[in-house]
Structure formats: structure tokens, C-alpha cells
Image 1 (cartoon, rainbow, N blue to C red):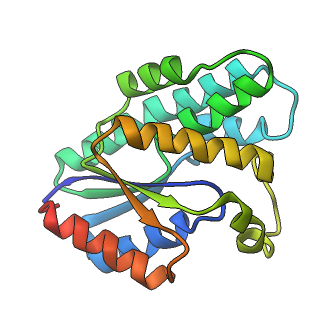
Image 2: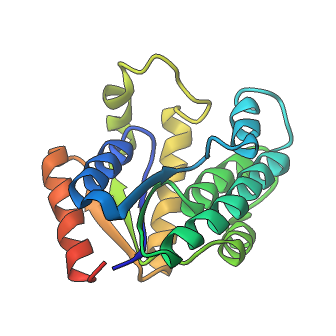
Image 3: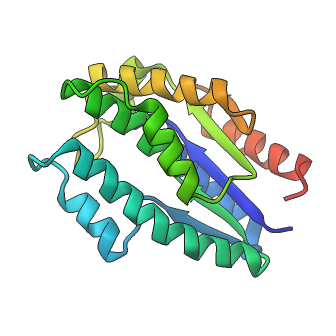
Length: 197
């Protein structure tokens, strides 16, 4: 069956590893994708990494990339594919709410959630891989490149925003990301099967 499965969580929680393993296990009917994408819009998002740009510009670039990506994913689902997406609108809401607040621009959670859900395909299920932020440094220590978001104080706030999302969306399934990756993969696969996806 076709559908959209999303994996979310703070940097270092294992979502990319789990997404890849789940897509491999589900086989040919599955398409693995991620955000930001590799499109020209997604590249613009990545080029803004570390540059001094307006946090609103940053949020809107992520949303522009998503709007295009959503069209592509909707077509894949229409054609009978199961799309596994590594990050989706939840990331923009969680990360950009923190970024905007830190720039003194208030709590933009409601605005970001509303704007993003208007342009996004509703996931059939979203898995939030929950990792205590203090565990992040050990998880990303071997990465060659670090993003501007990989700071403990910032990720603590992002994790709180993810919890706000989970509390407001019954489609979010929280999973303990401190478990071995194989266990998390099995839990995702079981939940996908349970939903007949």
C-alpha cells in the first residue's frame, strides 16, 4: 500500500540511519527521500547554513523546498509508492521556532505549524526518535561536517518544540532513540505493517 512515513528528531538521534534501514527492508515499493532536498531550492537552504541571513528568510527557504518536494512525494504516493522521508515539516517547526525565538522574534510555533501544514502532505505516520540532547555530542562526534544547529543548548530547545508537536498531533509516534538502532528499525517496521502501509 502507498503512503508517507516520516522520521524526525534532533541531530544525532539516528533518524537517517533508521530511515535508510527501513526503506531497504521495505524493498522496491519504497522511495527514500529527505529534507532539505538536493534540488536547487534545497541547495539554497544548505548554502544559507552559517551565513547571516534573516531567520524568516531561512524558515521560508525551508518551506519553499518543502512545497516543491511535497508535489513530488504526492505523485510518488499516487503511483503506489511508500515514501520514507528523513525530516519533513516537523523539523522546520521545531528548529525555526527555536531560531526565531533566539533572535528575539517571539514564539512563532503556531505560525510555522500553520504555514507548513498548509503546504505539506499529511504523513500517514511520523516517528519522533527521542534522544536526550546531552547524548547528541557522542552520536555526532565522528561527523566530518557539523551544521549550525548542532549545539546542545539549541537542541534542548528544539527537543522541547518536538514534544509540543507530538502533543498536538496524534499521528506522531514517539520512539526511544537510546535503544539499539536495530530495535528502533523493528519498531518502525511493526508500526508501518500495523497501519497497512
